[in-house]
Amino acid sequence: MVGESGVAPYILEHIERSAPPVDPGYLCLAVAENNLMWDLISEKANAVREVRPAAFRYEDMRGSVALRGTLARFLGTRLYECNVDPGSVVLMAGAGSVVEGLAWALVDPGGGILIPTPSYSGYWNDIESRAGLRAVPAHTTSEADFRITPDVLTAGATESDVPIGALLLTNPSNPLGRMLTGSEVDGAISWARDRGLPVIMNEVYGLSVHGDEPFRSAASRLGGIPDDVHLIWAFSKDFASSGLRGGVAITSNRIVHDALMQHLYFSAVSGDTQHLMVTMLDDEEWLARYLTELERRLAISYDAARSTLGAHGIPSIEGDSGIFVLADFRHRLAAPTWGAEDELWRTILDRANVNLTPGSACRIVEPGWMRVCHASVDTDVLVRGLDRVGAAVST
Picture (cartoon, rainbow, N blue to C red):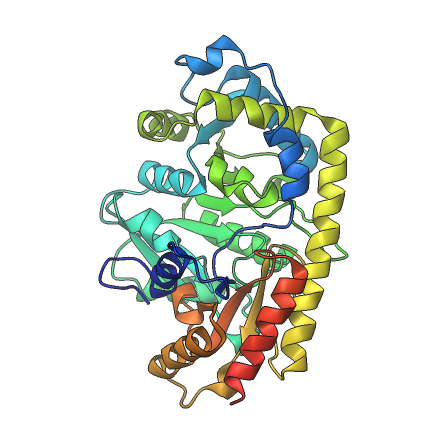
């Protein structure tokens, strides 16, 4: 699950195989990046823009007044369906910095944050490496369609050997590639409130929706942003811009906001990058075109991934959002063990030269699942890569 360096083996393999001289046959479907949108993003990234002198000087560490105002309007209109106070917006260097900052602000040292699984693998590093906290899994199962229920949360909290200080939800889900149902969100928030626990709601894939139903944010469901629910968004996923390192915390809790301010000296975003972000979000014509095309391209890559896997007899979870397909390789395991999952993952890597994310990294409770990042390469390359995977596991 985690190598001696503290980095997951699939990441170490990616770093090694991507280093010069680059192997032209290597294909990474394991890193959560959307690389389908560069032609549209490059219009803004490469356009001549008039950068303000202030962008090259110290500004408000939370983000410039211009960007926080733009983010408040954008998120309130496009995602939250409510008014957002620019004073509640805090910009940090990536969503991981936001997770760490909120964890540190909300939970006492030695405490834990409850995380339903399957989960984004990076939470364990975000929460445990510097904040002095524990990431505590609350396991869902494939038998129950990986659904989050109050019973699942209670079991996770009961089995924890540290006190639980907060609940962290990801919606849409990484790695399931689907939105949580309304009952999952409402039930989880009610469960946390019954225990006096704050909720961290990570919605970084909130605009990356390719199914029939629109995404509905927790802020929309709650009619605003209460002081016990703290929201996360980022440029990395919805705007295919992970390299910009633009994570956003939205909190109406003044104590939490002030605590985040202590982190900002170490995780501020450059002024020039902020200026680029403003130009992206303030251009309504470009924005509408971008978001429409994002939905269309994600639908194409998602359908291609599932259909190609299915043609090789590999089932997968039906999704509607995000950039993932969670594929079921359990029937290809030599035995229902984590060792057999690791062996299968390495077989795919060696025979197909394709890197997937093993289910163990996502803290899935049963061996044999693997995450496919279907938006990480062009769709024709994706299909050829998954054909290689299918051939590798059938020989």
